[in-house]
Length: 83
Image 1 (tube, rainbow, N blue to C red):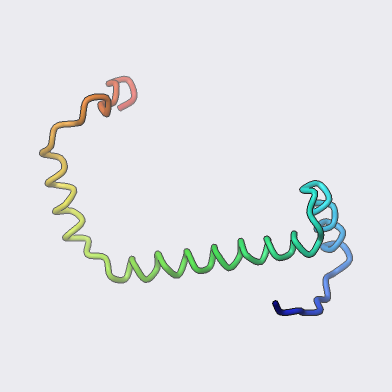
Image 2: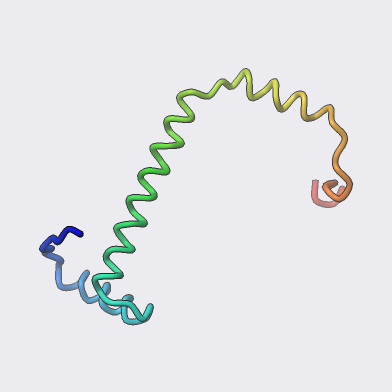
């Protein structure tokens, strides 16, 4: 486990303490969870960026065209009022 000394502006620390208290967690736990959420968001963005670079719009359209030829599975139909 690593330890880091953080300098947090008073106003931000106040909000973080308040939110941690509302969530019934320690400030440390709150900061760790906030960091985990940010890392997850950035890694997810990188994942989808990498996938988009490998994407083939032509292949995607071929797949969609083939799906349109299939009959809907019973229960999956949209009522005409929703189209």
